[in-house]
Image (cartoon, rainbow over all chains, first blue to last red; front, side):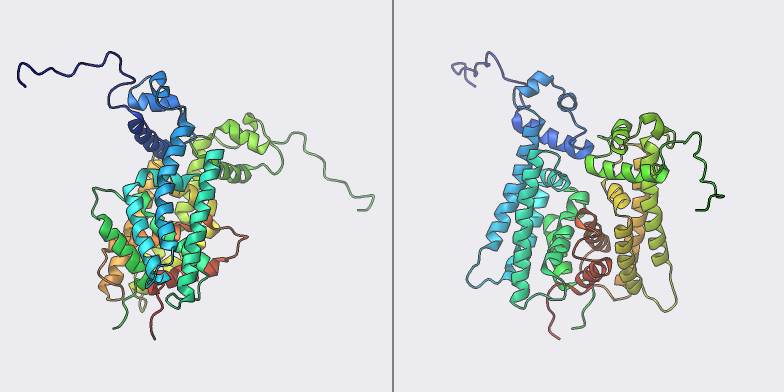
Length: 209
Length: 209
């Protein structure tokens, strides 16, 4: 810096502490909700976790419902985008191919948005926000079951298990990864996506060539 | 009733209300823990749910930790029995066959003990009791991963996915059923067990004969 340059003037008043903006509060809230349970977590707990006063947090967010809603929207928006894309009929791409693709992309979303998806999967419907999230989940489940049914109808999938049950179990396996996946663990995202698609579509048993 | 028969005398003092014995309290507690979260549930909530006073409940149990411990033991004792049996080498029965059997029997346990298994699967390790339950779960996970490894070693399972990851995903699919299975729903226990073993071992894709 030359002597003629001016350092940026420090702002007179800062809103909240630096680094504790809304997205940092949201991250901490989701982590706390997942660790202790949403209902058991108060804004006071969150303030304590962040080393802030409650008024400092309320400066950024209206309450824990807002944080829950934002986290659930984060997860649901991503999953909706993946499922909507997969549900769209594409020339030259059958339902089976789109189903494999939606499994792979769901794994990507679950790993990239693990905290908010974890929260979503634990929602029980105890409030308006949770009920709205469950409604959006049901929409996703219905689209996925329809895609499975299409893949059965085109003759690519076994037809001895009801499509709705296939969909439950297939995405039950996918969703289970939020419970144990660790980004710094032994398996990267591609490895998990490959394992799930291999097991689900081709099975664990070694098939004779 | 003839005139010489005597009606049973009413007991002078009854301990708690009839029908609200310890096992009924435990059932209600587990249902409430699953619905609202263990940490968010107080003995006062449980008393309210049962229409009893808190002292009436404390007459039967020492506190919510005892109820949690009993529920977790219920789930863990059943699962331990299934896994121990499957881990035992049996003449003429390979690891692959024992793995298929442990999947089937796990489904039976999850359905027969759905409330306590649901609670077990949500345990986060917030107390000594929960940490002990997680320790027992880890033992089960290790035994199951070893069984998968044995089935790979005998050449019956695909070897391109690490056994520990196979085990996570396979039992992730099994465990997912506690989230949606309803005893009065469209699928009975045998149907779910068949679907899971078919999908997991033989895959969803229709194999050319």
